[in-house]
Amino acid sequence: MSLSGVTTAFYLGRTPRSSSRRKRRYPSVPRRYLVCEPRYFDVRYAINPWMREDAPVDTALALAQWQNLIAAYRAHGHTVETVQPVPGLPDMVFAANSALVVGGRVLGSNFHAEQRRPESAEYETWFKSAGFDVQRPESVCEGEGDLVPVGRYVLAGTGFRTTREAHAEAQEFFGVPFIGLRLVDPYFYHLDTALFALNDREGDGNIAYYPEAFSAGSREVLAHLFPDAILATRDDAMAFGLNSVSDGRHVFVAPQATGLVDRLAERGYVPVPVDLSEFHKAGGGIKCCTQEIRS
Image 1 (cartoon, rainbow, N blue to C red):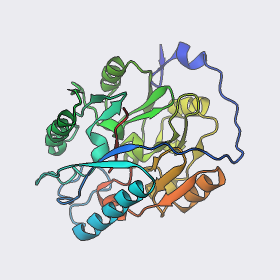
Image 2: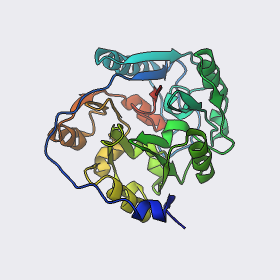
Image 3: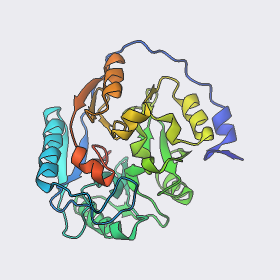
């Protein structure tokens, strides 16, 4: 028997952690990120509600915003590596969708949209050249777009892109429990637009999320597992505030998500505002542009 992708015994057998909302000082952990320059970024098709083919993209502005993000990562001690962009693949800048990397193992991507499927081979080539073995999923799976490691689990979104079958494939591949979460609002078509990991260390994992992006059962699961989570408003979620990247202390976040920025600071995190608003035209933001390589 299952409950929103979680086995009933597993869900009911774990006592919820007690909630403690006092301000803490969290340590940062150096990260390794993979990104792709937005040299060919554009909106040439519409595969989510944010995309409008009649909305012009300022490529120079997008590049400048992306460079600011990379500079912010490096200024905070993180390693940033790049994959070469390919003409005709305007969404290749959204590196998070290319794979999930946990423990040095790489599960590649199998995109839902035909227009993005060639990206999988480009990223697979990069990972192999960097010394990784790559397994490509048989089912539709869009990498960190829908798969978010938090503590001892991987939170796994479904409803619009990545399938439940892909969750099962990924769990078998990594040997880590996957918690299925159903997305119900098309504006939050990927899990990483509705939720991000604040701390991803085992035993201390926590998240921020927008509850109304999820089905009722999935909201119950999240409330049970993460009683100390930061809850975002719709305004902050629509400003791509939850498409953020955290190193455990610093949170690289959209400055337009003002309420979320305040709540992060109140809870002891250090917001690092980075404006990637030009990418919002394609339904992406900070996390979409960032693939984390977990060794």
